[in-house]
Length: 404
Image (cartoon, rainbow, N blue to C red; front, top):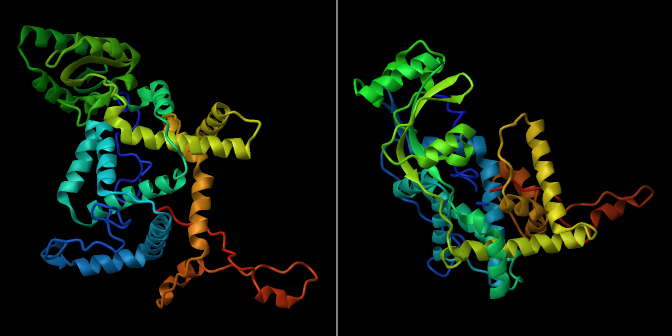
């Protein structure tokens, strides 16, 4: 089913929901409300994971396959998480279970579809739900370490929030039914049938789905997710703004070559929260932006912060074009700040690795373990070869870790 004219991009969770992610878990950080530095014991359903013609695939077989295909990357991610957790404990930085729940709630508020995915995941429980929470806790821990020395003055935060509050609001979103045809004449006939009540919207949708019309698969009784009004075709925005739940629009041209009607199933008006309602997210974002401002001032002293944001936005747009992704939405301010902070985050990770003693008796993971060992410098031309055996203390191999 194609809905590009409505969505422009699929409504999915930002980041990889089940393995990474919010910018963005078992309790691995030592949070004050029940966190732990050890891996959580995750209950799993007994019996085979699946059966194929009556023959079962058990969980151990699944685990062995996953380790064989993705073990090194997974181990590297877990090592990174543990190193960051230990650094946080050393610096007295904690992420509580309440912090994790606040971050979950923040994501839920972004979109009803996102809220449903999170709720379904957490309700199901199991390893995927725990991995999701672990990743959120890890990201919050990184954020807290990065912003540890940033002080929040109430007046400064309020001023910043007043300028930025639109980003925390939810835009108007709708669930609609879609009844369209490639012919205006056919759309007008359907409009008359609805007006005369000789056929229902659902009946006509069913007919159009079976019709020999290039737009047959665009017809829907109800869109599965809420759609942002801002991403609808321009001539639909005004129509949608005037509709109430249960209303059906007049016949109209939706886009060139597409004619028909929409039915309002459910409408959610735009909302803008107060600072007190989203203080957790606002304080975090404010502090992360101050870190980014400091980084820009240090690395690019002749560049203003707004200029750095614009340059970063252009970089992202160029990368999207190189990938052929011309429909990608522009990055949000939070994403641009995150990008500006990426070097600071990497520096933090490198510092946590510097004194790390990472070992394994499993030869399968030798390459992963070796990436955490001090580097042996290459001697300069003409230098005695013996110098290579005496690396400087605390030197570290500049290996970029896989993002957990």
